[in-house]
Length: 452
View 1 (cartoon, helix red, strand yellow):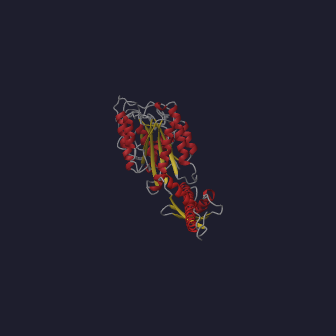
View 2: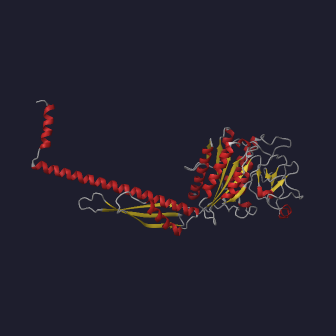
């Protein structure tokens, strides 16, 4: 008989065998298969429950750490918040008898951590061989929070090349990131404050006009200090007069000339020059550090695109608004904190859509200033960025539709070194990418404020 015929017959004979020995063997095999299947289902149930509970607890602890960081809740309220979150999101996906219990919550104020333990008692789908019909699953989660204050100065390009859709994109992205930085804070004790520095040929100092020395003729010398006597004579704010009692042409400032050009020295040491050759002052004024979302958005709505690109002047004023040396000059609520890295993080966001090309300090009388000083403006920007970083300020930069290699090089050079996943230099080719860059920077600043 051919082998191809014998094999099927033997198989049919084996399958149809009903003898006692074979029945016992079959029963043993079936029992083992059922037990193995039951164990597999139980294991899947336990694994999925543990994963679901871990995800829910991680989300609860992270959310609580975020609210502690922003001051929305106190450490004493942490347990209540985590418990409420688990009740809403802690389903393990199995039997109705499942119970989720928050076993412990610890807020370590020294380590600035939130730690929680939670457990779920689940009914096993296939209890076998007299094993327990339930299983206790316990998981833990820890997240960092921070009570460090955050100060952010945003230097934003409002030059002529930003006209049309670009300035609209900037208004949208800047307004959105203000919401991201400042929403959800305790208004009585804000953790984050933001300053805005619009720039073109110069910076409109707004209510800080009294810090500006208005030149009446060409000069390369040191500007005078802002003494109490001078302050009494000229007054404060945008309406400050000239020493002789006449009105100022505007509230704009160019570079500070002399020995304090590349420092954050107080205007009580040397005022900030308004070069006599300045012919254009941007409409939008700077806004010192504040947690007032409405005030910042009002300043952003004033953005109008016009003028040339003196980026180093914008950098200069970003530094001033973060400097403790300017505290007695700035209004209450806008005074920068002392630069203790354990208590405050200071950050600058520098944005441009083109090459820095305008400068006044060091340009000879009769020399071209607006649009004709790319090298001088770039060099000053790089020097100021280096000094800011030495002063403990972390710098993020954004190139918006940048094409010039020199402009990209300045932005890369000004940016602080990347740390792990925290990137400091961004390029954006359209409004969506500009908005995304600002949002990513806000997230990076929050991350740095917690871990630094």
